[in-house]
Structure formats: C-alpha cells, structure tokens
Image 1: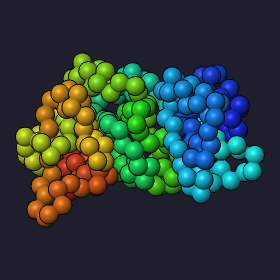
Image 2: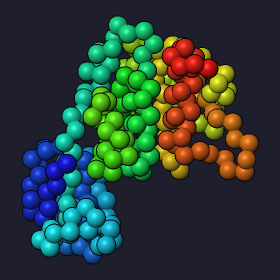
Image 3: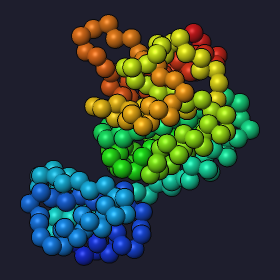
Image 4: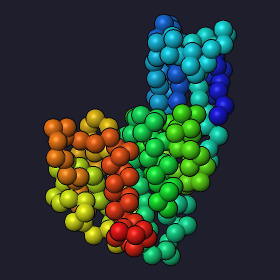
Length: 245
C-alpha cells in the first residue's frame, strides 16, 4: 500500500486523478490549503477522514507529513461489467454488495468469508465506505488478493445490471419479510449488506427483490454485519448442496 504525505503532494495526487482510497488529515491541521484538499477530495469522490494526532501517527509518523496523508491501495479494482461478464455462463452466480460498510475490520472479515464461500464478485460503495487498508488485508487473511472487487459510486446501478443478468437481489434487514432460512437461495443471487449502524439505505432496499432477516432471541436486536454475512453465505452454500447440512 502506497502513501503520499505532505499538503502539496497530496493535493497534486488528488488533481492528477490517481485512484486514492482515502485522505487522512490530523485534527490539529487547518488553513486554506487544508480546505482546498478537502474540497478537491470531495469533488473526486475520495473519502476524507480527520483523526486525532495520536491516531493519525498510526498511518504516518514521519515528521514532515504536515498532518496530511493520502492512501493509495495496491489492489486491482474491477469494473462492474468485468465481474458480471466473467461469470455470465455460470449457474447460480453469487455476488456480495456492501452498502456503506465503514469499519475496516468488518470489511476484512466479510471479505475473508466471501472468499471461503466462493463469491464471484464484491461491489462496494466509494462514498461512506471503508477503503482496503493494511488492516483490511490483515483481517481478511489475504482473501483480498483472491477476490474480484469493484468500487462504485452508485450501487443501485449495479443492482439493475445484475437483474438484467437474471440475478435476484436479496437485502438483509430487520424489516425482512421472511427469515433467511426460509428464502430460496438456489438461484443466481446478489446479497446486499448494509451499514453497521443504519443498515441498508431506503433507496437500496427499494432495489431489492426481497428482504430477509436473522432471528434474534435475545435483547440485542442486531448482529455484527460480518457475522450476518457469514450466516447468510453459508446458508446459500447449504441450500446449494455445497456443504454438508
């Protein structure tokens, strides 16, 4: 993973259209050029994070970083069409769509499970989503290197593309009409997982063909999103007779 540090180098990198995962700014930094960096990053759809100085040092502890670091992932991202077309002739395709997953450890855990379950492709949003950082690589146990991942601005457009390729889209939500174990997953499928706190955005729920939920018998009303991903994905494998029940 490559890092660019310093105010002017980061601003130049943003404006040169290099694919930047995120820009990190220490909270004690301010001024005209900092404002310019933030505006430029937002214009290019790049996530900006502001961190306390002590936390910022975890990303770069050099004295000359000027409180600004751009993170450039060495991962190869795919266009949605490349992922979809690659398995166009496959029976019972399986895709995972991540709607604003923000925690890097959650993302890494989801990717690790996805790779173990043979997921054909991952679609994640650019905005309000965790980038693929060193922490994601570590948590995924290297699964990142074996998955086809696409970062997209509009998840709804990807959903419609999948539907045109005969995929059914199932969202995970507490508002689900049925329990996950009662749904038919023996079909070409795209599974949508929502944000850790807010769940699926309403506009994404509207794009889903149906919603499923996981039974909650205790006082806590939701599971960690990476745990939910594992439960749903292994139910898919069970129904498709790819694992012993």
